[in-house]
Structure formats: structure tokens, C-alpha cells
Length: 324
Image (cartoon, rainbow, N blue to C red; front, side, top):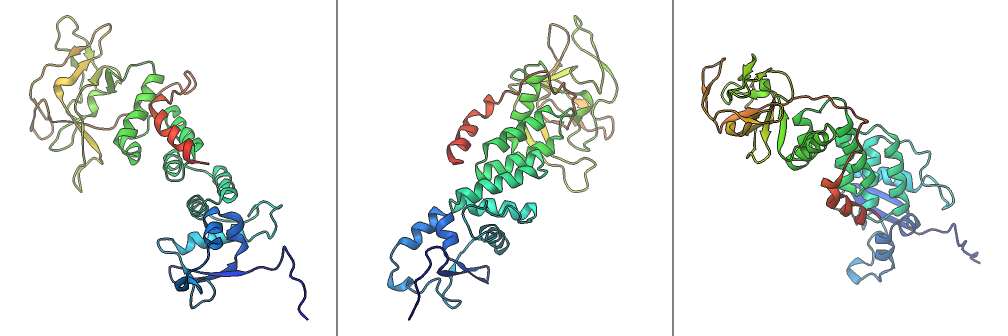
């Protein structure tokens, strides 16, 4: 005579196939953890799907997912057999595996596992750019804020190609926030140095020695490496340009209008005369709308001003609305 089935420890099993690998696990892990799978398994199976997930020959095929991510998720889900023990607390996964767990738990609405994955990843060393990318991919607003704050509070301004991993729009917004913290108004001017202005042919610096402002009333001596002696008008049209393979400088660079450059003299901004300049290295003529802006570094007092994230308020609101 058959005995009575235990209400807690009599489990159905389900078979999945991910990238050619077969997995057979207790069904309760998915119905307990995921609203998506709970709804799917509660639905009555049609004739064509009646045997799906019941055997190796008829697994539930998960298209578009990676086997390593799915296996990492299973390690977390089945480390403990009870709800009372936090899922996967002692599971030792790599950062990449935890990212995979976060990805799947977010897509499959596994709230408890998602929260645990965020907690685990938060304890690991995440680069600021990585935090922002992960926050966007998985709707984690606190990582976005932490990533932005780390970049704008850094004592040295990160290279432009580093910031542009997040896109041109985000890169320049980050520079804008840094500039606000430094007490300048980037809505009007963008800080740079004379030596960061490059020839569009050989990519060498156009100005390696000090120059005098062409405006007689100013006559300010402009040092080639000092930040704040020249500015780029905020209305200037800027477009990215990547140097070819083998160029002496790594991109991206930015094509700017020479006519938009100004001297940063005290109490005034003197436009630099729109004219053609000759590159001191290759002798090419660089005209007013074809000058390259290279990366520059600036030091800032990281604790002087609170970081203002208003330029990202819409994106933050979107992240917060989707993270739960």
C-alpha cells in the first residue's frame, strides 16, 4: 500500500535544455522562486506540450540563454532546500556567474534571488563604468548613483575613451557634473588645454608652447598645459572621430570649431581669431572647423560639493520604477 506523500518533500522534477546541455531539477525551485515559471506551470498543457519537461527526450528548451548562467542560477536556487535559509548564502560563484544569476533572476521575476544577487555583487569590486552598465541592464538604481558619484568624485578626470564606454551623451553629462563641482559653468564653456588640441592629419599637438591672447585688451599668456586658460563654447558642434590603426594617439577624439575657442581671461572670454593654423609637426593647414580635441585631465576637490544628479533624473526614475 502506497504511503502518504509529504507536503514539503515530495517533489516533481522538470527537465530543461540550455545550449545543448540537459538539466533535471526539482520543479518547486522554479514555482517557488519565479512568478514567470509559477504561472507557466499552473497553466494547463496543450496536447503539443503535454510531455514537455518530463524527460531528457522532451525537455523545456530555453532559447537565447547561456548554459553557464543557468547553471549558476541553479547553484543558488538549490543550495538550500528550505525557504527559511537564505538562498545560496554560501555558494561561491565568480563575479561573471553572479551577473548571470542577476540577469536570469531579473528576467524571470525571481525577486528573492535577484535581491541576493545584487547583495553579493555589491560586495565585490565593481568598476564605476561596470556599475553603471549593470545598473542599466538590470535596473539597479543604487549602482547607477554609486558609479556616477565615483567618476565625478575621482581626483583625476578619467580619460575620454573610458567615459565613452557609456556613450557620448552620458560621457559629456559626467564631465558636466565634474565641472559643476569645480565651480565652473559647463553650460557655457568646456575646460581643455592648448596642448590637447590636435592636428587632424598627424594627431600631434598644435600648440606646444605658450601663446598670447590675440585680443589686445587681454594679452594674456596662455600656457599650453594649464587647464582653464582656454574654453570651448557650449554651443559648439562636436562630433567624434576615431584615429586609424597605427596612429600615435588612441581615440576617440572630437572635431571642434576653432572659432568656438575662447581665452579664459579674468572677467572676460576673448574669442580666438578664426583662422587657419599650420601644424608644427607635419605642416598641414588646420582650418577653423577641423581641429581635434584630445583627452585632458583635471584635478578636483572630491568632497567640496554634493553631487547633483539632476541631469540623470529621468533615467534614475525609470530605473527605480522597474527595479522592483
